[in-house]
Structures are given as structure tokens and as C-alpha cells.
Image 1: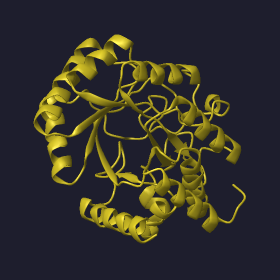
Image 2: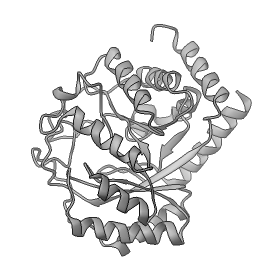
Image 3: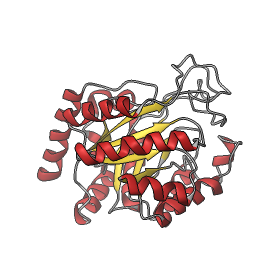
Image 4: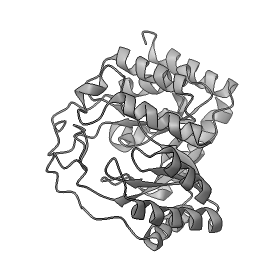
Length: 297
């Protein structure tokens, strides 16, 4: 954390190369159920505790979800995630999502992921049987900082769901948000926690302060800090997928290829839950830049 940024990035890039983790992966998601979440996460535009003016709607139909997956595949995504607001889904909602997963995995060949809140072992087993390959459940920050950003559920609940998904034989994608006011020690602790959980992929988001949330006035993280954070996570977890998600365009702007020099190996394409991203064409150009960096050094 104290070495010059260029040295940290070079060390991270070398670690990724030595562990074979520098392989580009593009993910896409569908916001399948939006808004009115009963959790009080200070940063979230979908929390019912905030008034952000986002679009709110019930669960999309399996046909609508499939159409989004088809669009994602046509635009170069290799993974497709189904994301819903809230910490619990009804049995009927899970049945509808299972139908969508089965159709997507069976006909499109996409690897299907899901982020559906705190599910039981039985529910996760059922989703896996339908074709789900990976479950997404962020820890958001360090164990000690987590209570400062969420009070309606505990950090241990997050860990329990991750462990249950692992026990079900699913891959796990878990990361969090950088720029919530945490310290560098919190970031290191977060990375070490994820490493101890043996997660398969780590999505790093850089806070986009949303008007109407309790974080709307938070200062934006600087580019250099963001790059150092990516390198830190790569050095702690040299063999895992590290993907840069929300905030990529706003933090890095025209320097987005630098995330790959710092140790990242994946991105999310096609926009995020409540905010848009750049075009698929621009992201595919970025993918070629990543491969060039990893080949040439």
C-alpha cells in the first residue's frame, strides 16, 4: 500500500500473469426486479429508505429475462447475471427465475449467475439444478466497517449465504464497493476476508454517489487510489477473477485500459443496475486493449 503506484501495478500484473488469471471476461446483468428493498444500505438507490426516483417494478417474466440474455450474448458477454432487489424472494419468484435460468443455459450457452439475496441451501440446490453456475453475494466492505453502512442485516449473514452457496457446489462471486469512507486497512481486511472465503471472482465497484441516498455527498475516489486498490486485491488474490464494475467509466474515463495494467481481468458490459454504462462497441475495444497489455507487458 505504500510503494509507488507503478511498482504496485507491475507487481500485480506479474502476479496475475504467473497465476494464469489474466484472461478477459465480460459479464452482463439484468435488473430483474427493481426498487423498494427493505434493507437500509446507505449507498443503494433501490433501498426503500431512500428517495432516488429510480424505476420500480416487480419481477420480470422469464421471457423478458431471456430476451436480455440474448442481447447480452449478441454483444459479447460470456456470463449473464440475474439480479433482484431485496433480501428475500418468494417461492413463486424463484420458480420463475429457475425457468429463465434453464432456458438461458440450455439454449444460449451463456454461463448464468444470479444475485437474489439470502437463499437457503434448498433454494440454491434448486437453482443449481436449473443450470445456475455462479452465485453473487457481495460482502461490500470489511467486517468492522460493514455495520457503518448497513444496519438491517449483519456481516455474518452475508458470510453464511456465501458459505451455503459454496456448499451447494456453486461458484461464488463476491466483492464490494470502494469509496464508502473506509480506510486502506478496511480494504486490505476486505481482500483478506474474500481470500479466506475462497471466492471465485471479485467484483470491485467504485462508489457512484446517488442523489437521495445517504452517500450522495461522498467524495469521489481518485483514479490513483482506484488503481492501487485493484493492485492490492490482485496481490492478495493472484489466481482469482477481479472485475471492475460500476464506477469504471466515471473514475477512469479515457484511461480505462489502466485497470488491466493494475491487475484486473474483467468488466461488466451493457450498464449496471440503475445506471448506464458505455456502448458494447467501446467495451469490446477495451477488451482488445487488455489482451494487448497482457501479451506485450
